Image (cartoon, rainbow, N blue to C red; front, side, top):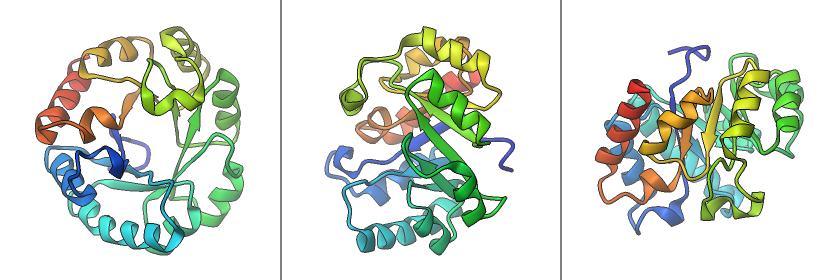
Amino acid sequence: MTKKILPRLYVVTNRHQTRERSLQAVLQETLSAGTTFVQLREKDIHTRHLLALAQDLLPVVHQHHAFLLINDRADIAKHIGADGVHLRSNSLPIPQVRQFLGPQALIGKSTHTLQDVLTAERESADFLVLGPIYDTPSKKTYGPPLGLGVLEQACQQSTLPIYAIGGITPERVSDVKQAGAYGVAVISAILESTSIPSATHQFLQALENS
């Protein structure tokens, strides 16, 4: 894999949504089932604990020849040798982060409006996550769902790979792909599943077939 050929499935972590299973165990299962792109997004952990968790997870992810991105913390990503960083919509400008991490680092950006998408495009992000596309409890703070229309507009106006997030299920993969999405970003649909391998396979199959 190279940074130009990104996986279609992007698994975003939340250790509070794992049905009391350890985050490492859940990630091991989805990675073994074929996930190759992971964002460590544990926003409520103190820096030292986040660093320790990232250091524990990196070899697990790399063992499966997968990418690990750290949510917003470019310092931690650089310190542990992660594959890159995923920036919030209101985070540091991408050019400064690129200068800090180097040209080979993957830099993703969360976007919630068409203007966010265009700004990130100008700043040369490697990929974008746009949402929430559908209604979902984890994205209530970002306002009402954007819908497929906004996703389609964004994909038409941006040359970057765009991952749809927010209420994504295997059954909805075809719709977001038809709207132009490069792939999907998923939290609860995999992390909360009673069968992590089955949920992972369903998404991978839907992405391959759509």
